[in-house]
Image (cartoon, rainbow, N blue to C red; front, side):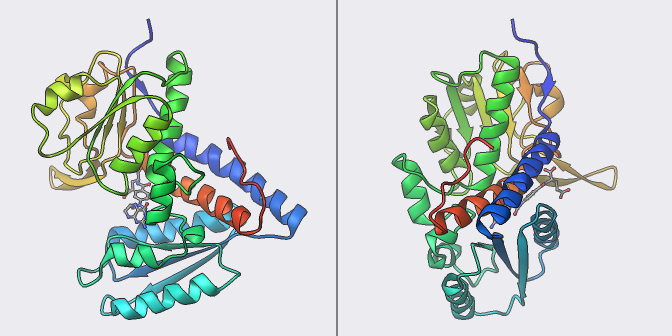
Amino acid sequence: MATRGNIIDGFGYAKGLRERLGEKVAALKAEHGLTPCLVVVIVGEDPASQIYVKNKGETTKAIGMESRTITLPDTTSEADLLALIAELNADAAVNGILVQLPLPGHMSSLKVIDAIDPLKDVDGFHVQNAGRLAVGLDAIVPCTPLGSLMLLKDAIKTHGDGSLSGLNAVIVGRSNIVGKPMAQLLLNENCTVTIAHSRTKDLPAVCRGADILVAAVGRPKFIQGDWIKDGAYVIDVGINRIEVDGKGKIVGDVDFDAALPRATAITPVPKGVGPMTIACLLNNTLHAACLQHGLPAPKDI
Ligand SMILES: Nc1nc2c(c(=O)[nH]1)N[C@@H](CN(C=O)c1ccc(C(=O)N[C@@H](CCC(=O)O)C(=O)O)cc1)CN2
């Protein structure tokens, strides 16, 4: 029988992935004279977004890619942001464009994402990339689901029989950024997929049927320990800031301490899925640069 209570080390996995990507970037430079360039656009001064954007810039440079950050005030009009995206789309030196979310309330994120050239859409949020993923074509895949799948596959290889095929996967959360692409990825792995959400009837019972449970609801410790099937694999995508004894703390969507003894393996928060998001962004930027230059995208990094 598989053991229980294993903690999935997303921080360590992401470090290894960045190292392997760094080697591919060096090879691309040596063999084709190409250095992938990522441009991150941030609008406004959301403190968490500022930290994520800074980390993106630093890790991009650390693996040998070029990084540019464009900071715009939150008074920027949607038309000005769209004009900037059009310029970046037309700039052959730019391989990846990412607009940090959330955007200020006066902008439509769907409209902004739709303006990005799908080949430079390293977030994988453009409707063309979402559609390509849905029909099983080569696509740029959203970073958080891609990183979650990498951790899940590695955990099932380490603690199980290595196959996701036929497993019952329940995703709690139906966002375009995490829930829906995660469902597509798990379907492609031949899982039987359920997307649960705020209107789902008897959510605890649905979760108890999950061999794989992905929590992406954005509510601290929402998923209770007794909702976890014995031996399940649990991927916690939530990043919730709460206060405990007057101190700020980050917790996931799953009650980790209660879920740990029941799960075969579970991602912690922090240091689970979060670090994979930025590592997968680097992966997608390399992928995009290769596609734009007619080179095969590196596989199985
Ligand atoms: N355009 C995008 N916007 C946003 C995305 C995205 O993928 N594309 N995702 C999130 C924010 N995000 C990256 O942008 C992100 C969130 C969290 C982490 C992370 O490493 N978290 C750490 C804890 C961080 C902390 O201490 O605050 C962890 O889980 O260990 C990385 C990236 C929304 N916006």
